[in-house]
Length: 535
Ligand SMILES: [Zn+2]
Image (cartoon, rainbow, N blue to C red; front, side, top):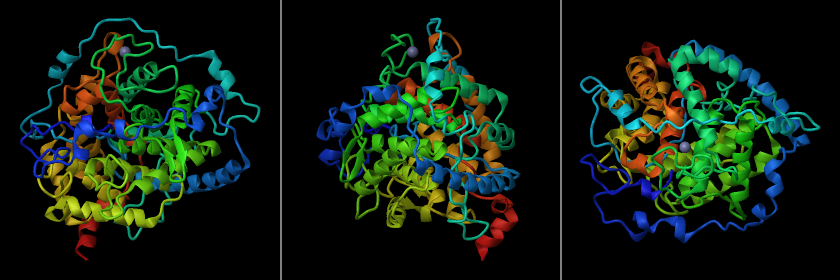
């Protein structure tokens, strides 16, 4: 997420990833030296001058879309078949990008055995003012918007999954091959939720979270980490201080997309549509692609993920160009020596910013957009450069002082860049997450670690999931204006505020269907995995 501020000065004993303790930071590394001022996105770019009208128009379909769609439908059928097979297994879906709300790990270490999460403690903090809110979800205008002359591209409520080219990464049964978006449709969600460890209560919490997010969207389609604008009128506490509106908007869009809502959906269709238009208006187009930073590369990575997902799920041709160009800018901004990303294009990378960009690239791949294979190879090179214990732990700028959050990010990145489940380094890393258990306050860590363990499956997931799930259900605000949101007094959470915490919590509870499992069933029937690993 957002940037620097989210990377607070080191205060914890455990290696704070965002603030490398060792070498004195360069000017550009200092939180205060962040991008907002160095490379602001011109608000008067050509794309934005012509668009007030856009805000109320449907994306227009094209022939390209039709051809694209046939392909999508075909692949979707294949993927669904695959999904059904995989589903029988017990892993969980995952999600890729996480936010960089400071990757400082929490000072308190929660051992899964010794220190149970304490929802009551959070609830005490969460009690808010009782302000009655009437969220206007049923806007009759929406119906008009959706009934274009050509009809909706996608059947409302039934997103067309693009999915990953499932054969592409497959080397053997033990290799990652899933990770697509095809679990997000209404029927797939209902099917996958119980199989992967979700409950009706966790899904109800997701729905309440989406409602809160929708209510806090601004009139121009954006979200802001300071959620006090527009309808909120400061009725809920804990506004964030990060400035990037593209990061906030993308982060708020992702939970809607994660639950299967596109711009054509009956429910929240307009919310998604307005958010996408905001990103479109905010983009600065140039020879290197669409610059959506609005601050730093955090905003770019998040926006690229949202756009790629929106395109993959809807097949909407008008989104395709913007999604591709946003990814082009990510490719351009990679450090061509080290392979990572940081706040500014070309800077030597850090693990948290790199995590978001990698997920943007993987989302692009799922959407069948163009990503040079060399870009992925270089990401692996970067991961090598910050890992220790053969890849079980990850630091922020180097292998030194590997933290919990950066380790979770690094492990998920390894899964997405093709590490087989049988790799002993991966197993050791997963054992660490299992030992640490969910954090009470660090949603950045929780978001990534939950995905890693969900993909991993097995007893580690069985231990993690009920703790994480029940903790989030218990800590969601249930009264007054804040109802449906989350806030954890964490040094990262403070920067992103209630909006960040809510988006991260919702996506964590969407883990059961948001991404398909990366490993198929044989991968986690232990014997097979172990045997193959030993070969
Ligand atoms: Zn509010």
